[in-house]
Length: 265
Image (cartoon, rainbow, N blue to C red; front, side):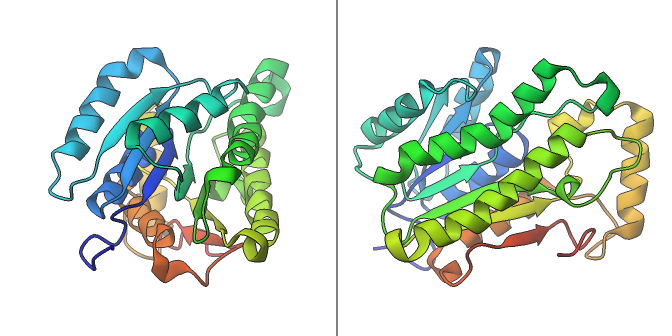
């Protein structure tokens, strides 16, 4: 039985894009609360990072176990592999918490967006959550949680950063949350929510040009209601971990503002 200190003890979580940035923060926080965590990552060159995060989780005093799975989420055949490896590694029959965090973004204007960029964006950000969830459904028990990471880009234009393909993919993610909440609610006892994330200091953000990075930091300091700063992975992880817990049982079908009030919903 879960304790107050370890409210997710005995739970199994699957986090896509789980070894870096927001995903890493979520993986760590779920583990701190007692959940065993399987982290999916796409790039084989990130294996050393995956090993480091697994070790970090296993060094926690929560008793949580961790594993990493290298899989390209654009490939349909990988979904059952992800499920099977998770169940086998943790010797369980269910996956209680699913966090769809993996994302693809290529900030180019519409006129420069290639068919490949568009397809990769939709395949990673929309098709993968849809069909991975479809594969997972037989293994998500009553009381299960599905959490989709969205973005304020779904609802507003970020000046200086062209990301229309990314924006419409995240709008679709919020549509999934609304529809799945009804489809999986009374029939399966699963809640589904999206988190609308703003500017978060991650490795991906560090790849922006110094000019763009400084401009975004200044903008966030000016307009973020909660504090004059950008978000951190831990800010998002705390919200995701709450939604993953029993206390969030009456929240479903929502897109939750997880951006410090920069773009209230």
